[in-house]
Amino acid sequence: MACLTQQGLNSNYIRFSNREPELFSAVLWTLWNRRNNLRLGKPALSLDQVVDFAQDRILERASCSVGFHQPRPHQVAAWQAPVHDAYKVNFNGTIFAEEGLAGLGVVIRNDHGQIMASLTQQIPLPGSVIEVEVFAARKALELTLDLGFDKITLEGDSEVLINSLVKGGNSLAHYGHLIADVHMLMARFSLLGLSHVRRHCNNLAHALARRASFTPDLSIWMEEIPPDLNSVYMADLSGLN
Image 1 (cartoon, helix red, strand yellow):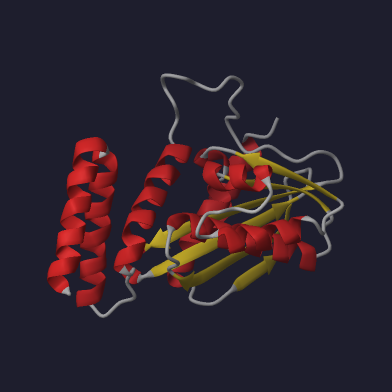
Image 2 (cartoon, one colour):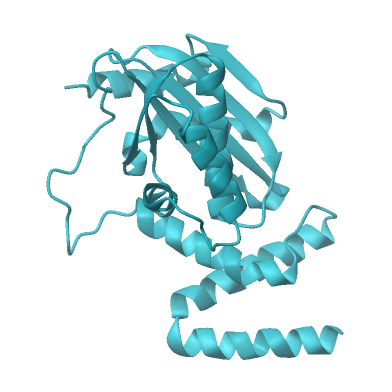
C-alpha cells in the first residue's frame, strides 16, 4: 500500500513540477506538515485531501495579495462603515496547521463603527482552507440572526468564497453542502449585501480568528471586543471616512 501511495504521489509531483510549480511547492509543504502531525499524534489530513488543501492555500494567498500589474481602481484603503441603519458583519478563518486546528473570528459593527458583538471560536482543522472561511461565514450569520440584526453587509477577505456566495446556485465543490447552509442563512435577512475586501480591511476579524489559538472554547463579547484587540479596533475607527 505504501508503495502504491508513493507511486501515485510521485506521478503527481511530476505533473505539478512541470506545469504548476506553485502548486508543486504547496503540495510538498502540505505533505511535510501532514507527516509532522502524524509523528506527533496530532490530527492530520488524509492523502486524498492533500491536493485540495494545497490548491486552497494558493487561492487564499492570491485573494489576499495586492495585484501590482493590474491594480483595482478605487481600492478601499481601510474598513468602511455600513450604510445608515445597517450593520457590517466581518468574518475570517485562519488555520493553525501544526496544531491541527482552525480559528473563526466575527465582529458586528453599526454604521458608526461601534461594536455590537464579537466572537472567536476554535474548531478542528477541516479538510481545506476554504472550508475554514465557510465555517466562519456561517458562524457570522448565525450570531447575527441570533442577535436580531436584519439588515447587514457580510464582509470577508476570501475572494473565492465571496464569489461563490454571489453566484448562488448549487456548488459542485467538495464543500458545496456548506455553501448551501450559508445560502439558507442568507435568505433569512430582509437585506443582505456581500463584500470582498483585502486583509488590511478585515484586520479585526482576522485578529479575533488568530486569538482562537489560545481560546479553546466559543467566546462571545456583547458590545465589546477583547481588550488586547483595542488597538486593532481603534486603527479601523481612525480610517473611517
